[in-house]
Amino acid sequence: MLDQRARVLVAAGLSLLLLPLGLTLNPEMGLLPTGLLWLLGTSLGLFPLTFRLLLGASGLLALLTGAVLFTPFTALLVQGLVVREAPREADLIVILGGGMHCGAGELEASSLARLEKGLELWRQGYAPRITLSDTVGEIFGDARCPSLGRVALERVRALYGAAGPEVVLLPEMRTTRTEALAVAELARTRGYRRILLVTTPTHSRRAVGAFRKLGLEVWSVPSSEPRFDLALPTPADRLLALTPITREYLGLLKYRLQGWL
Image (tube, rainbow, N blue to C red; front, side):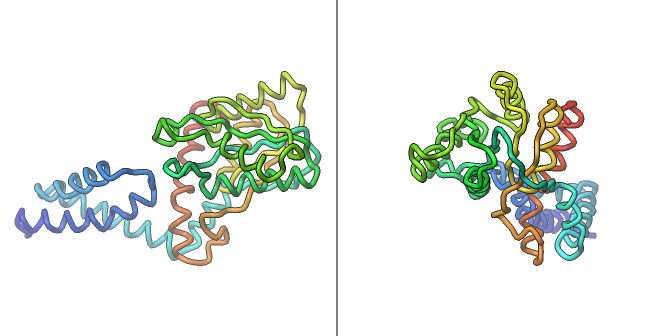
């Protein structure tokens, strides 16, 4: 049986090895929470019972990680999240907000992919106008973070000038739910009936469900997936897919419990 010092050393090592998995699930986790999480895991080695719990949890996580990396399990989970429908003539193209690089004040890759798809649909003549989400900085963990929608609008204007699409900014957007409510109000006041909904593929099931719950006539036309190969051909792709998969299934659960789906 290991003595206390040995248990603490083993616990520290296991906690350190598990941190990359935790950061994969929550990439926004800062330095302080990451350090505290490691110290918490290390402290589990102080007592035989908590050390055994740590060993058991580590073994279970190892099995789950193996299933994610080396089996079709991840691909099946992704397939359950994607709703892809043929675009058709509509009144409005709704481009949902994605992420921001707050320090640089730039759109994150998923936001760029959504904007690109929305503009592609506009150029093809499916609808004369688009929406962009005028976000508040707090949703990205930094009150000074610029609005995603306004940064995207600058890009649209730089590309097309006055010849670009009509742009409707949805004010103070925080979640997919607030975007759905804002679009429902917009459709009611302006008489819009048909909507093309653009988001990244793994977000599409929750998004289209939230919009249809409000009685909107919506077709889901996802963008490309810039963060990983959607076919998941490699273990690295499957690991990168783990973050959006986890978030979306937790999001689906939350939205169902709230009655938003």
